Amino acid sequence: MKKYHISGKFIILFMAAVMVVGFAIGARPLLSSWWPSLKEQAPVAEEATHFQREDAALLGQIIAIYRRVDTLSVIDMGGSIRISDPAEPTENVNATFNYCRRNAEMYYQLGDNEMIQLKDVCISANRGIEKLFVSPPKEVVAAPQLAVDSIIALWESDSYAINSTHTDNLTTVQLLCERHVTCKELKITYDRSAGKLNSIYMRLTNLEDPLNRKMDREITTVFNKWNEVITDGRRLSLSTYLQKEGAGWKPAAAYSNFRLISTL
Image (tube, rainbow, N blue to C red; front, top):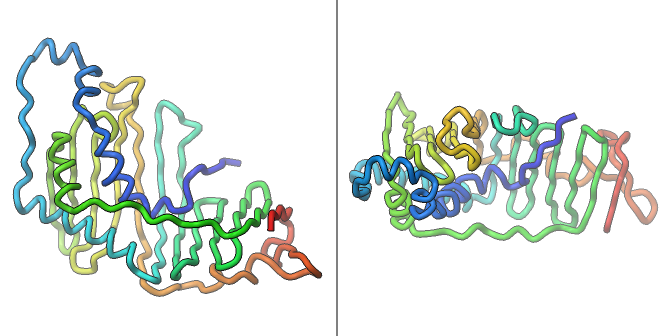
């Protein structure tokens, strides 16, 4: 049975990780050390990228969508995640996900794995091995935020070329740099009128073979549900997972075959 090693806050923090971390570490000294032969063959000065005002405005819209999600007290989304890694085929993933949050309470599911953060308890369930892990609630730390202009400046300084297409209400923005140290391509499709993400595609550099595009790791996230109300309240109900038994707990009916491991 495949195990999925993806953080419970993957979906919500996905954009933050891309914007704040992924592109910030695209240092040119590393690029120079990776492609010395190319630099020797064509010793040309690297020109800084400058996005047009219209392109910067599109990037600002994407950042605004992420930040609005982060401020909502209620969000319910779902879709699919596909990870293809030619260098590590055993790490490939093709699974559905569901994520919902109500204030500080959160539910996240990816494939056979579920993680639930409630007021007084944190629950992790794995249907593949039929185990239910219960522990005290964990502190959720908000991701740091840079100013919009600073994020766009990071993309510019990393020499990304930007392209965009528009179809009906959907806009697709592509950032492309085939010599980037971490992420060669980022493509985001979003609904301009609804302010919702439609899909996110990332093509990540293989550090062992950076010039070989066929070895790049690809991650595709597609959103087919995006609501500002909870569509299934049972996901944030303690009784869905646990029932009181004397002074302790036992798995609820839907998890009756699971082995309970508790640190409460």
